[in-house]
Amino acid sequence: MNSKRILLILVLFPFLMNGQVGINTTSPTKELDVNGDVRVRGLSNTTGRTTPVSVLPDGTLVTALTDNTAPGTKFVGFLSSDIALNTDFNFKEIILAVELVDVSNEYNTSTGRYSPIINGYYKISMDFDIGDYTNSSNDLDILIGLWDFTTNNWVLRRTFKHRDNNNPTLGSGRNESYGITNYLQLIQGHSYGFRIFTDYEDGTTRNAKLKSQNSGSTGTSVSTSFAIEKIL
Image: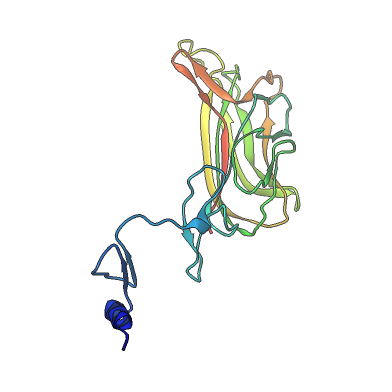
């Protein structure tokens, strides 16, 4: 037998016997044992962003940038300016004109509509500030959430009561922060949007705002940010 073939058989024989392959190790403990870094070129992307890796039911490795079914953050957006809540017993559309993340181009920054390209269960996060409301006697009733424009109903809604704190040290009409996180199913082909509804007491000045920023003597930060993350 050719000496080269004998040498090849001797090299491969341990791996053929136990079905384990080692890279940079002579003692693999699994079917594939890599002692070092792994690069999968099929998962590369041109966005410059690092993305988590998920495993499909058949064992295929994917990311949210290579497969729409993969879990991960789909959208994060901010307000470009305050929204005046100057209507009573009526809706205001929340349009997040500043995008931080929109992996699959599912959000329209002009209309404020989010249209998922695949069915799934999603985590909806809404962090927001209400400010500039100067009435310390009457509550402002707030309803905020996610509206399904296809079926014309709420799919996520929360209610709050807000009023000025009447603390002269802190200043009139200061921002108050609120947060919502919930999980729900979003349907491919449906159009969703964030909305806010306000109900003022009779005779109350309608001067509350959904704030884009929270500013003070120690600095300024983003106030209102909404995010959509696919989890299943």
